[in-house]
Image (cartoon, rainbow, N blue to C red; front, side, top):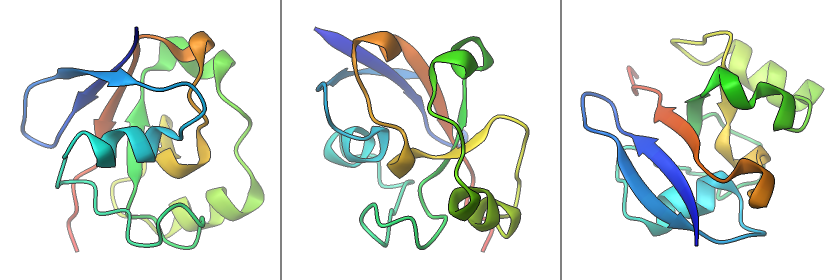
Length: 106
């Protein structure tokens, strides 16, 4: 069973079962984390699925696209490890990936 480690803002890390082929955003949403609204549903047209990814997995993630980078530029609280979770396809290479849901500061 594949695992994704999710930490909500001001919350404790939780290991959730992760299905191969889903996006990290879909896995977090399906696990019931209300702190990740993902308003556009994975269309890469908002930044409401903003997460910070574990730097140890950086070389296993797909490269950031120009659209994703532009959306993150407008996101509050961007960090070097910021990604849009809708743009990360989950699979066995990401088993154990840790993500922290970025705070929504409006």
